[in-house]
Length: 269
View: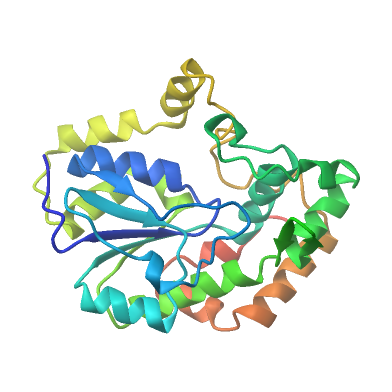
């Protein structure tokens, strides 16, 4: 069924949190396609409220950070915000592979900075993802801005009606989450329709469809706790320190939202 784009649906996701997966779910659920701002690699400002806009017949989807200016615009638009977060340890690994393997080059979205990571060990590359890497054509600020984004998302969700979910919930409890999303959007979908959406957005089906078009690099693992065999205890400590430094309220806010597993790892007992 097609839903009205007014008030507009605004889907904001953390980088490498499952954006394509949620877009598939939202599009199948609403029959709307997504719009996003013009992307210039290396020059996108995720804090720029001017990048937020609505267009009839579409929902907005991007990695925009809900700064106070963005929050004000969301309220002025009477937007319906959907926020997608991810476990910070898995996210770190996914970010590393995105750059080190130039993932998404086959869809014209490769960052083309993989040569920098070829000169490093994997451990050094992961550390660079956590702490930052400054090159003439690659100003990576580390995990900090992404942790701040999640804190801002959860802070805004305390004062304005938002749908908040995580990659982990979407992949582990998909039917429950898409049913909850349908209810949030006031869509009277039957359980059979929800099951169809669940199946169509499975990792294997989405990867197979992309591979048929020679565009499957984006689909690497599609499951949680993929960091267990990738991160060292030194990396874990660096990530934990980044949380303390950049998003000190994230533990409390994630607990209130019922998603405190975004800060958990089986590597720390």
